[in-house]
Length: 131
Length: 100
Image (cartoon, rainbow over all chains, first blue to last red; front, side):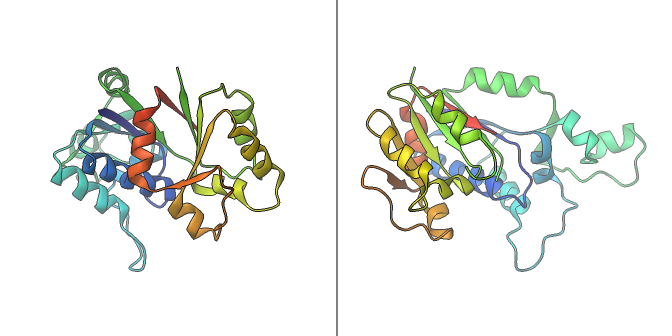
């Protein structure tokens, strides 16, 4: 079965961790994830600028590893990302912000249309957010 | 179409869960995770409401969230599930609705 997953919560939220564990279980159960879409505060999962305490799970790093090792399509909502300063190199240059941005491969900044398309392609659309 | 309703907010801080239960149709499911599992604390009214619901709807709760909140005695008709069963439940229902 094809799943589209959207994450509304930041990497320091239990629901982002829950989303990741769900995705791991989905792939372990031989399901497919057509796209991961990170929306609202969920865009912080893609930020390479977040520093996690040594005694806490670095969930952004776990997401990155999961996406890379499974070659998944991970889209970060560009409007939500820009307003939170979660820029990639292209956007940092476009808006003349310092540095090279904080979003790197395997993440891609793109529009909300990607969420709509994923929901159309998938058999199930699951949202994770809140506490 | 049978819908699996996903709840993660505590029933004691807002009305999401109460609203969600009001609109359930027979054959729908309720999955409690995060702070929503506090609804299953022994002795509270919402737990009794959920037990009554199980005559027409499946009610399930994520095991790790129950354990981390010290809720270890579930009613006989409410099942605790792991992540593989979470995925299976999402696949089994026609659609899911997350109460954000």
